[in-house]
Amino acid sequence: MLFEQIAKNKRKTIVLFVGFFLFMGIVGAALGYYMLGEWVPGVIIAVVTGIVYAVYMFGQSTDVVMGMNHAQEITSADQAPDLWHIVEDMALVANVPMPRVFIIDDPSPNAFATGNDPEHAAVAATSGIMSVLTREELEGVMAHEMTHVRNYDIRLQTIAVALTSAIAMLANFGTHFWYFGGSRNRDNKEGNVIALIASIAVLVLAPVAATLVQLAISRNREFLADAGAVELTRNPQGLINALNKISNSEPMSDENVSPESAALYISNPLQTKKITNLFSTHPPMSERISALQKM
Image 1 (cartoon, rainbow, N blue to C red):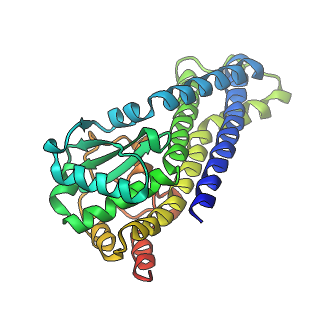
Image 2: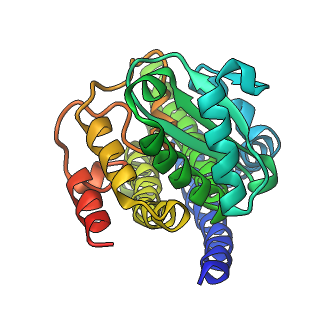
Image 3: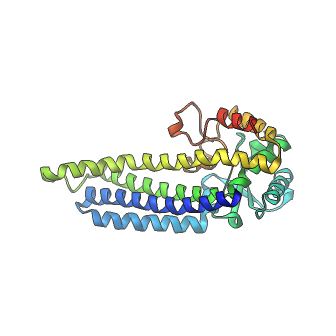
């Protein structure tokens, strides 16, 4: 079952990569037509941008994501003994290499994992999660993160973060171009007006569509990671208690978390009010806890 899940995630990574690039090509075509009246230059720009983003994230994903969230690496158990040893134990149980460990100085309890594969993984925990959770609860959280590492969820999410950011950048460039001078297609003939309107619509809606795909991926992975945590710890109550405490805590400071990486966390670090499931980074906490209680 485990190996099937890992293989499935690797296949999903390829599909996601291809799908995002096709979508990026559409965004590029819209950008090129809107700015220059030609779709080919836009597609070329989009594809090159996507490749650069993907290659950069593959090579520097951990440092980039940790930098986005103001996380500081610890390099020995002396700096945070409890966290270090719990991560070490959970990695051993999950049969993955010990990941790099980071701490985010924020009182809100939360954590996430990132990286390209288990050999290049990293976990981050807030200072709040270390002070609020018991050892049993923190073990549940770190087991959840080690499941993400073991199942290659981290690679899937890293690519989603990178390509969503690239699409948002292209779309924002096009909309800002409109503010500072507008399209060179202002004098389009009536027959081309529909194409111009369609290009504008794609540029406006592309970031939303890309984000929805990213969030859908995240929500699906959370249930599996919760189940994996119970498999590793044999103790669903530890994670249940942890999720209860996390869900009843204040959100993280906007200064300490990047919205693009919010889907990586065990719970939405920025959520301050109820939102529809479609736009949520995670499944409803009540549903996750209910599923754990049935294990």
